[in-house]
Length: 315
Image (cartoon, rainbow, N blue to C red; front, side, top):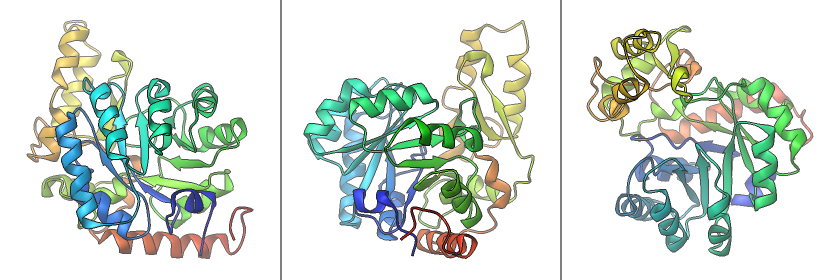
C-alpha cells in the first residue's frame, strides 16, 4: 500500500484529500471520504460560523476519523469562522484565496494542523515559516479559482522550496495522476471534481450529469480581467461572462456582479442558464458516479500498478 509522511501526520490510510468545494463539500461528503481512508474536507465558503459548526457536528456524527475544514480567506466571515474552527478543534484546516498567517498561532495553539493552498514559491516559504505542517500546491488545471501555473510546473518548485510534505492538486483524476504527482515530489494528492460525482455528494443531479457528459474541451476560464480567474464548464452563463469580460460597455463592478450567486445556482438549483458549474479539466476523465470508498480504492490500486514500487516516499 502507498503510504507517505502525510498519512502518519494526519492519521489517514491513503494520502488523498477531497477538495473543499463551495456549496458542494458538506459534512456528509467529508465524512464519507474520511471513512474511506482519505481526508474529507468541509467547505466554509462564504458561510457564517453557525453553518460551519453545524456541518462539523454533522461530520462528527458520521465518522470518528480525522476530517478538515477549508476556509476561504476572502470570506466576509473569515474572522468568526477561524475562531469557530479553533473552538471546535477540528483536525485539519486548509486555506485558500489569501494568506492565513494571522490565524496560524490561534489554530496551532488549538492543536489544529494547518495546510494552506499555495499558488507560488513565495507563499510556500511564508506559510512554512508561519507554522504550516504541509502545503497544497494547486495548479491551474483545477476547478474554481485558479492561478497562473500548471500543476506540472508548480509542484516540483514548491517541493524544492520547503521540507514540508506537499500535496499536489489540479488535473488529477486517477492513479496515473497520483503516480505523476509522486514523481514530481508530492507526498499526497487533492481531488475535487472527481469527488463531485461521489454517491455521497449532495450537489444537484444536473451538476453531476454535466460533469459525466463533459468532453476534453468542456472547461474554460473567466474573470481574468478582475484578477481572479475561475475555471468552469462551458455553459450559456460562462459564454456570456466571457463575452462581457472583453466588452468596454461594462464596468468591473458590473462584471463582478454578474458572478454573484452563480455557483449556488449551479450546485443547489441546477440552473443551467445562470449557474457557474465549476470544474477541473479532468471532467472528461470522470465516467461514472461511485461511492467515495470505491473511488479511492480504484485510484490507489491503479497508482500502485503504475508506480510498481518506484518513488522514494513509498514504504
